[in-house]
Figure: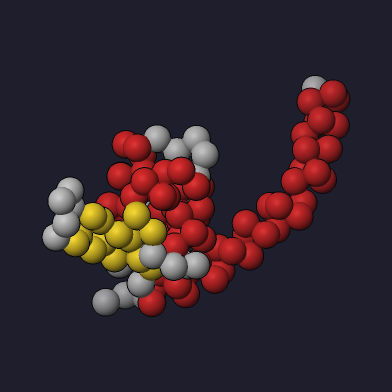
Length: 119
């Protein structure tokens, strides 16, 4: 197998980069890093995230081995999502990005305002 090169058009790492560049995936992995949560708990905690997009994002994260879905035999069925060890390694790095965004949003907004004024 050739060495992965994300700059090559056919490199499979681009699929993973698409996933981790998705804001919903970043936010969900951050929440799940603190412990397992049920579907509706995730939906309540991430404002603006629709049920459909939450479902799609969780399925993608599960397919990539970053999240584990567990169904419990209750009535109705209870489903819980937990981060995997692989997902935890990614969540550590993504948390740095989230933290950077929170710390520097004022500077980014100021730059946007300057740009928009000059345009």
